[in-house]
Length: 384
Image (cartoon, rainbow, N blue to C red; front, side, top):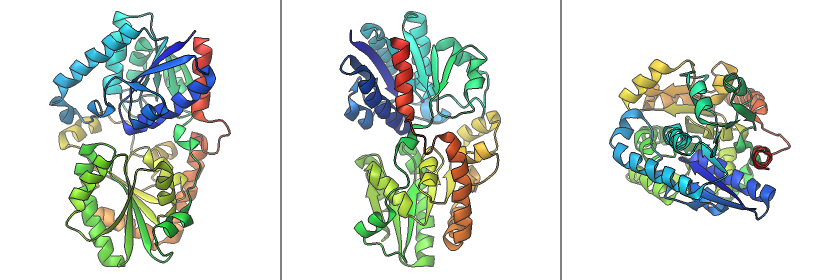
């Protein structure tokens, strides 16, 4: 009998997780599976039949979301009704708690017989630990990326499984020499990788600052190339608009392998805080981390935070292995100084990479079994 699975993802990282999971579910269930839901281009390419485009729910920040509330409520109702109409054997929500948890709450109330699983634990170790009990009340199962997370939820009798971080299913590092050869970048020339964010508002907030840093780096080093991976032509267009009045040499790519190759070829990276920092470290490249929010959103988050760092490597190590420039520290002078330190001090860069790798081993780097395969096996056992 064909198993019906409904998967919801609301951002780029969740789209990648969902795509890997869909591929492994197909292997586990053979042809006896139907997968519907909400996702991006990666999940759709893997076989998802989407209800509507993922970017309609890809929003962040308290005040940024306010003006979209009517549409989000409408999409919440559309999604919930669609799930109830389809009667899936399992609903899997991936990250994006603002939307996903509301869907789960509605399904739990209107159709309590439908099994619910969440993939990527909310960061209860970072802020609002009470969310662990709320999650346990709404979901039947939880899949976590990090090894220290299950105990936070198991104490509330939520069936929790650590599967590892799906980012490490990729082959690391990338092909650095091949990338430089393809783009005719001499070994003696500097290459800086830049990640500005997966959401439009992140790009619009970060890139004007990053632009000034890029111009200062060109003034200092002369021949310097910039590599910016994007997830869509729209993202590339937004970034190009901001950089349009410069003569900077920029390489764009949407290709996942080219992204890893570019990270590996780079002398350093100016990275937006997020899961991309794990990929960069796994590519043996040192970086600085930057992030900026709407000031009111930042104040609200800062009040709730129970940790001192933004990047996962630093959080796990409980020390600043990777320099962070968050909110008011995310400015041109600080970022320029931080990047120049890495570009000018090879030993400093190498020490960062070495220390980060020790942390990544605990996250699943070099594991023999893919996290998505582990997750698919767990789902197969649940559904029988």
